[in-house]
Length: 132
Image (tube, rainbow, N blue to C red; front, side):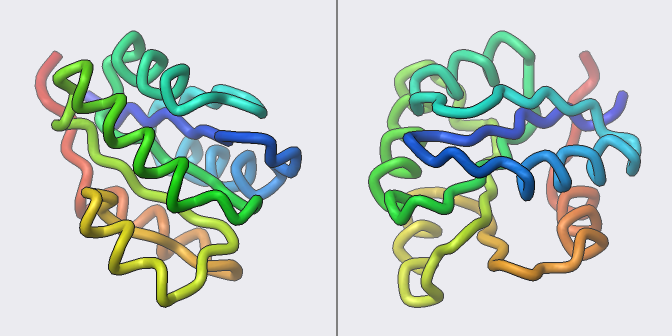
């Protein structure tokens, strides 16, 4: 079964070109991708991931609210007993904030300009699709 990934844009961030480019690269690499659209709450993202039986969630944050949004998303997943859904992200996130995000349970954070093959290779190496 192909890896199933929900790609999401939480909060008030209105720029989704990067998320769409990553979603397309993952799709072209054989993943099933569901893009949730702009202005999603962490609860909406967690609900979509559970409903879609996602193996992972890719979150794009450019607004500077990454610490709050990732913390809320991880809490929402935990509340749904969906801690097995791997979370990774990218956007404008200072290097100094990455250890804190990883401490929350975020598996990987990709900075601006990360080559698409790097993201795709990481997903293929780290996200497993259980037999459905």
